[in-house]
Image (cartoon, rainbow, N blue to C red):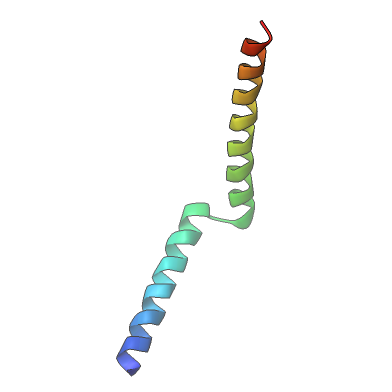
Length: 53
């Protein structure tokens, strides 16, 4: 049982490390999300312009 708990702790730590490396910081994650929102907004504006022609 103790081995299973240790394995779970190690797996959780590994997952946390991967997530932290992917975003680097909380601010970096916010910038990534904002960039995605900006891309969606730009696409929506393009569609709106095409529909109004």
